[in-house]
Length: 128
Image 1 (tube, rainbow, N blue to C red):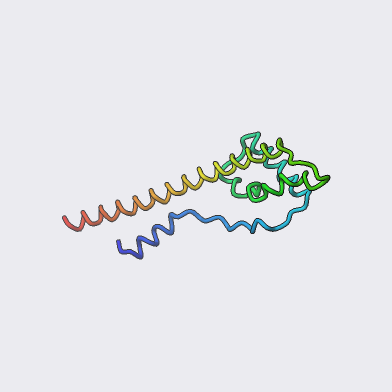
Image 2 (tube, rainbow, N blue to C red; image 1 turned 30 degrees about the vertical axis):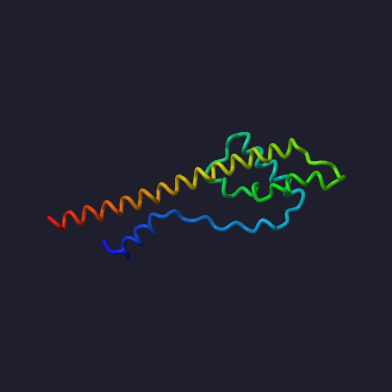
């Protein structure tokens, strides 16, 4: 199998990449930040964070905004309970993302190995 065919086979088995997320400097309203926080905490507490919805969650991008949302109102201090819950949900989201990338990497590796084994079998057949 020549290099072009090998590259085409790898491209066919490569996972579709996720669209790039918008930059984290876009502004959310206070209501949107609170809704984001509540939704992510709910998903994390119900163990409903999976490899399909983890890439859609913007909690990690908005961590500082979520923690500061109460502190901005009346010169109050950081709500450490909210910060710890946010951090815990962020850790769950991040760990599922890492697991998803790991699984996709092994899929690509198995595709590469399969193509390599096909090449070995073709070469053995022609040498006989």
